[in-house]
Amino acid sequence: MNRRVRTKVERFILASSSPRRQELLKRIGFEFDVVPASVSELAREGESPRDFALRMAREKAGQVAGRHPGRWVVAADTVVLIDGEMLGKPQSEAEAVEMLSKLRGRTHIVTTGFCIAKGGGPMFEGVVESRVEMVNLSDDEVRWYVSTGEPLDKAGAYGVQGIGAMFIKRVVGSYTNVVGLPLAELMEGMKKLGIVRFEP
Image (cartoon, rainbow, N blue to C red; front, side, top):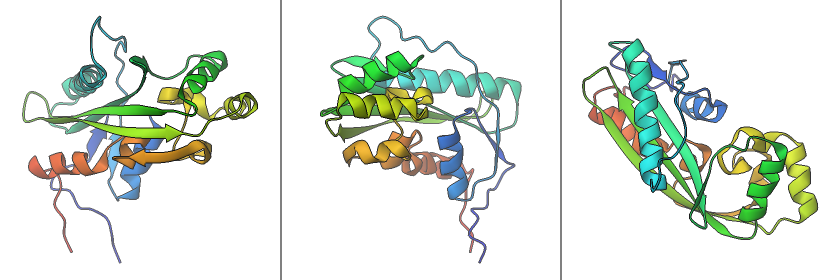
C-alpha cells in the first residue's frame, strides 16, 4: 500500500541541515530538497525565546525563498530555556557538559519557531513550546553522554530521539517539537496553504 502523502505542488525545500528534521519529514512520506540557510543566530537584547526562534525561522525561510522563487520553503529554529537563559547548540564538549549540568534533575522549556514561505506570497508561521523533565544525571553520566558526540549538534546538548532518550523522564506537549519540528502545527499550515492534500 502506498502511504506517501501526495502534494499539490512540486517538492518543497527544507531550509535546514538538521538530520532530525529531515527524518521526521521522511517518516510521513514527504519528498523535499535540502537547502540550508546561513543566518546570524545571535539573540537581540531583551528578545524572548519565542520571538528569537520565530525570527530565526522567518530569516531562514526568507533567505532560501529569495534564492528559489516559486518554491515553498519550510524553516525552523529550536531553543532550550532554563532559568531565563536560552541554550542553543554547544560549541564544545565543555559547553555541552555545562548545559547538561544546568538541565539535569529539572524541567526546562523547548521552543521551536517555524515558518512556511514562498517568495513574497502566502506565509504560515507559529511557535510551539514543550516542557521536558530530565533525570538527575551524575557527573559521570554527563561526561559519558558528551563523549558519545550526540549532544554536540543539538540545542540544549541532548537528543530526545537518540541516546538522550534514557535521560528524559517526561515530555509535556509536542514530542516532535522537542526533536526540532512540530509536525502537527506544520501540517496545519501546509494544508491551509494548499501545499498538501491527502489522497487514498
